[in-house]
Image (cartoon, rainbow, N blue to C red; front, side, top):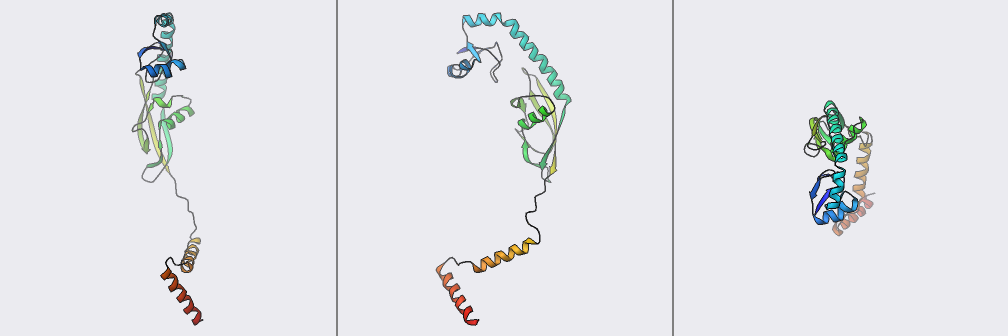
Length: 197
């Protein structure tokens, strides 16, 4: 089915573009949501009237994309993440992480437009992240990931350790044997121990 896009649709096109799409995609997704209209003489005439407006919108996007590219390429992003001694991160730096960090600096970028090498950064180092802007324009953002070592919490003190070991030994000595033979042997040992006392 041929449609005219009424607004930008990711991975399909932008406002005013004429696209050939699957019938189901058009009927079930694009048309009901108002993302596109059917390609017919009435709608073609309507978009011809709006051609100047659409071109102005595209030109504005191009200008804002160029200024965003300058901002992003001038910006170096430094991330401090929890990591082990070998530099391996205890998590990962994803496109969402980078989008959040850029937002903190006042730069709003859709996380879907951020392309992280290997889908996620999992160790410390310097990386180049590609950000897709308008049309085929891209910005390269330098990201430096450094790690701070997270020490494991000490769950038990040195004084508690021997006490816990004594408790474990005592429980093991007084534990019920699993098989009947072991129970009989334990019973006989208890009787013999009673005679000795």
